[in-house]
Length: 281
Ligand SMILES: C[S@@+](CC[C@H](N)C(=O)[O-])C[C@H]1O[C@@H](n2cnc3c(N)ncnc32)[C@H](O)[C@@H]1O
Image (tube, rainbow, N blue to C red; front, top):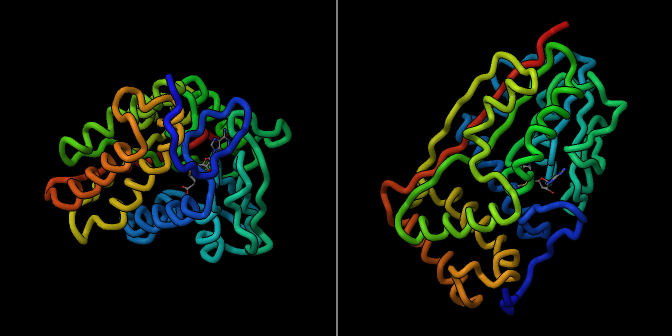
């Protein structure tokens, strides 16, 4: 396939990682907007209502990105609770944060061996463009290993979305890209089984459905279309997969998706939330 000339965003160059989204200022803004969309849809909640934390607990945010979830959780918890964010990329980490938050570089498929039974809660959100299908069970087993007996995991992933023909076409293009890298676009469907297979119990699933239309859907539509724009380089670097033949065609397709979502009353997207517990000893 011939590389298609285009203006590139900043992407990671980490050997072995298939993560397809950029890590630059635009992506920081997108991640923080996405966080607000999800938080608002949950009535402001950051934790599943069943999760209880105690004064000396530790919390891990796996694939933390900008760390926004930890930054907003910290003021709701006693300052004695230690919060830890890990990611393979540090470029999006905040520069100032409370002293009970720590950020470090870790690959979530190989967490430190010294972290056995350490965290009362592991949170992980939106890794579908990052973990290969074969890596998902590994990452979930790693979460299980580092959670204390009786501790919790909570996850959030994108489910399906629909609007019209432009959206369906981009969805096929995105699936082709993710499949080509071994990534797992439908990870949300397999999550309950993957959690149970790792040993988790009390698996709960919640689905939120958000409109992508008009003013109501404005923020998540912007978030989604900026996810799609963030995939330009991995798509055009391999020649467009037969869906697009130039940067102008790529841009026109995503602009078509955005326009279609804005005008289609039934345009909708799902987020899946999962919560489960590591059995007590
Ligand atoms: C879409 S972002 C989500 C960020 C954050 N969880 C949120 O909801 O805002 C995915 C993040 O996972 C990170 N990531 C990808 N592969 C990873 C891995 N193997 N280990 C740790 N972090 C990873 C990326 O660098 C990126 O920051």
